[in-house]
Image 1 (cartoon, rainbow, N blue to C red):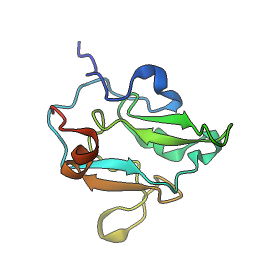
Image 2 (image 1 turned 90 degrees about the vertical axis):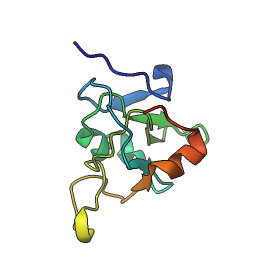
Image 3 (image 1 turned 60 degrees about the horizontal axis):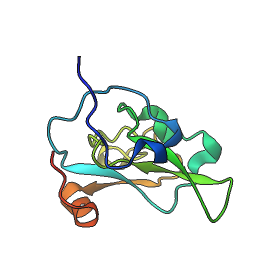
Image 4 (image 1 turned 45 degrees about the vertical axis):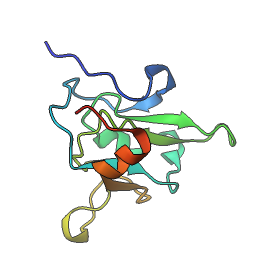
Length: 121
């Protein structure tokens, strides 16, 4: 039985809706990670991206403290596997079913680590 590795964001700061899926810890660092941009609206509490994420608690809602009851989605960089299922752009610019606002970009892991520190895996 596998257990999920702890994420970078504490569980008590992850609100519903949260991604559901595998609890298997990632085995290696992905080359790219999903990063939510300022274009995220939280889709009024029913975000499409969260439904596509295959990793438990990787994507989650956080309240906008300046504009309640609104919020946005965040990604836990330690749990993201870089699968791109949450994004709306696929290879060669084709459109996928992910974020309807195009508010998710894939960023090189080394760039994310400049912000959050070096990740162990």
